[in-house]
Image 1 (tube, rainbow, N blue to C red):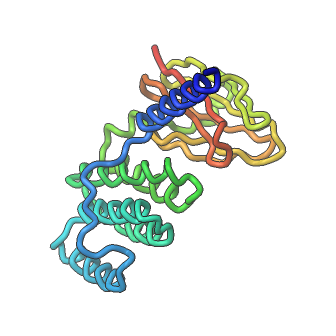
Image 2 (image 1 turned 180 degrees about the horizontal axis):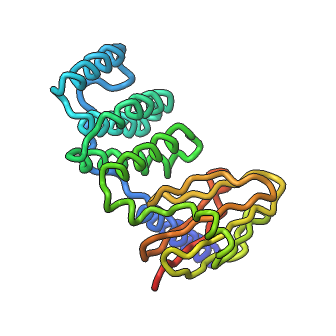
Length: 241
């Protein structure tokens, strides 16, 4: 009887963990990879044709980028890592050829890459492509600039409002509360490299041993900083007036 109770408790805990993960990482909608995927021998030909149509204005860059992101997602679902990276690389070459009317398509592509970045954090190419995509959306949408974190200028470096330290793969605090635009200094006290990252805004920077960096947030909300190298390294930032 006691053994059965332990088993039931374990099942409940696993179920709760699975539910939590499902809430944090949601699969993207509107996945449309087209007829030819990176696993096909015709994929290289399709890319040439699509590039030609793009330059002629017969297909939009946003639509094509979203299709490539869909291809990357489908390749991940099929367990084809190399083809996932192939589609991601192809998408990255398209992003610069997009206009203001294509923000919705780019946002849809960003949703797919953000998912892949969460489930496959070891694939650095996805992280780089995701940041390039976000930067493009920022350029096309002036209002987005208001919600992106930015590096403080030299004068603001001395006006650090909060300090966090990383030691033994952990932050000195698990949660902090700051006001919008306040400067947070993060110091790496370990003898190896850490990474500071958030998928909702453009934060993705490495911090070397004994080095410091700063971040700040322009809008209210809750933002979690994580590390691509250490899964259990997290801190939650509550931004409120």
